[in-house]
Image 1 (spheres, rainbow, N blue to C red):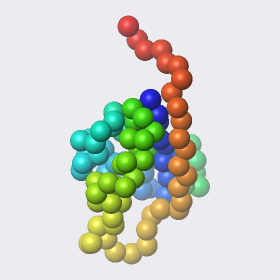
Image 2 (image 1 turned 30 degrees about the vertical axis):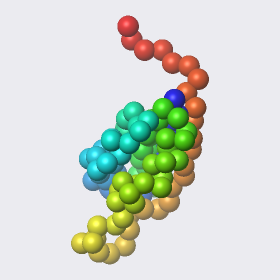
Image 3 (image 1 turned 135 degrees about the horizontal axis):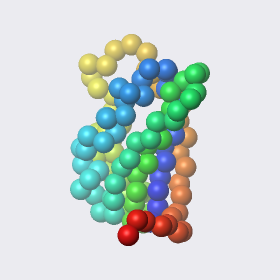
Image 4 (image 1 turned 60 degrees about the horizontal axis):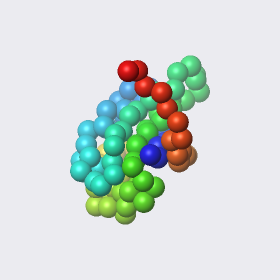
Amino acid sequence: MFVVSNRIKMKTGFAEKMAPRFTQGGGIEDLKGFVKTEVLAVQGNPEHDELHVNTYWETLEDFEAWKTSDAFKKAHQRPSQSQGESPMLGSELVIYELKSQLERP
C-alpha cells in the first residue's frame, strides 16, 4: 500500500475551513485502488496553518491514474465564485510505501 501526503501550508485560520473539502468525495472514492483519505492538521505553528492530506492507494500505478483522471481535474479546479487572494502558501507532495503496521486486534 502507498500513502501520498500532500503537505499544504495556508494562511492562519484557513485549515479549519479547508479540511472538510478534502473528504467530501467527488469521484476519487470510486477509482481503482483508492483506499481512503484522511486530513491531519499540524498543531502549534503560529506562523501559518498546515494540513497533511493523506490518500491511501493499493498501488502507485493507481495513484498515478488518479492524477490524470477527470475526478482529479474536478477536485483541483478553483470554484467559479471564488474571489480574492488564495489562502494557499505552498505545498509539498511526499509518497510513502507502507512496509509494516500494527493494528488493534
